Image: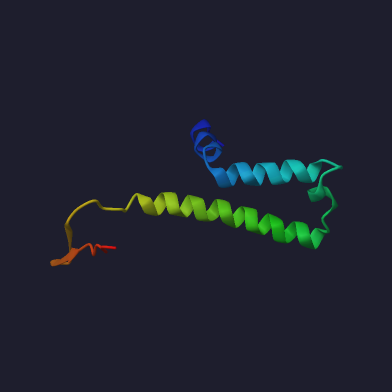
Length: 84
């Protein structure tokens, strides 16, 4: 991986959590090391999906628009604001 990708990943909380989980799994005295394969598989899936979700959220944030209105196919769309 390039340095830019590693820098981006290392700044994500979900990536740090995945790293911590995998490091704990490799330590013989940790609770993670005693997980059955099935339990490890489930926990790993949760950690990887957490990373996936954080990456997708960051990418979707690129499309956020801070404007009163946007035009889509000639139609004006306005943001709805809630007042509490």
